[in-house]
Length: 367
Image 1 (spheres, one colour):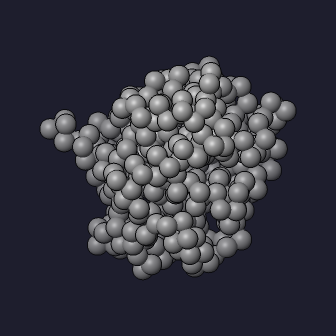
Image 2 (image 1 turned 90 degrees about the vertical axis):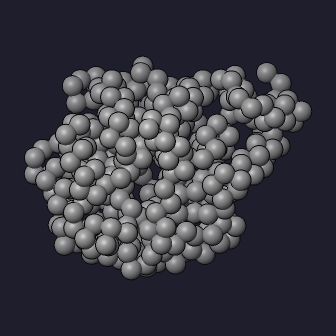
Image 3 (image 1 turned 135 degrees about the vertical axis):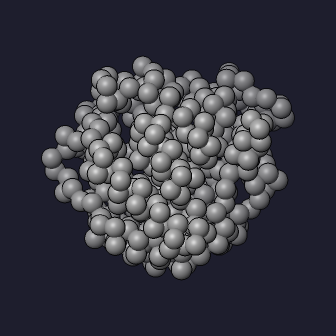
């Protein structure tokens, strides 16, 4: 298909993009993608403003009950040193975020559903709420849980939840996960629906540049976000890990630079499709390009997750290889990001939760 500037301009002028339009944008050359980026930057400024909101990321445990084929902390990886931060250490990181005016934190860990885990999160949420006088936003990224557990955590203080589907193509999904009760595509979708029902700000996302993945798959992923009426998205380039089953297909991968460029295009197109959602600039972008997250902000992203996990533990939370910032302290990360975001032309929304504008529109429709 002709992807000249004229054709791209015609696509970008449309009120609604078709799947084929999205595929054309994903295949666009350098000149064409710059046209896309100019449009997405304008839409970001108009609908969510030139603001970046912090989510202080606390990777509190790499103990996981799942065996996803792409992930470095999968259950069967015996070469990972397992850890779980105690409550005092986690709350110390939360205190850092609160005192440094972050506005929000993210609790992220391996997927578990045992009673001890559920109760620990519940206790932490209540203490975070008390510590911050209810001022800190709290996002959880802890996998599939029952409706009762989601509801319990919601009542205890969580109000956002990120549950990535990794791919909306069920066949590709099962190339990334074992096909069993622990890794069930339908349950993933049901969990997202449950989160929406419980009025969480609901987020999901995919990996970009996977083995076996097509442009059509990526276009369908973007349409899935739109049709599911999602509030926030975290997506980034797939980066392989040598100690995972998916690594055997590394010869099928696009070069890292192409995966990076595809990721920026996905962010930009998503901003066209869903103008008022929150879009994260994934840390994996920086694993490829030293200013990858800043580039994502310029084309449509508006969320950054500074890592405030204790430095000693970061090297053990490696979902992929070459993860950046594992040797930096929380202060270093904050100071570095502030300068980078200002250079990118955004203002940091200090002290603000940075809730999804789309979420409030979605909720108001149901009332």
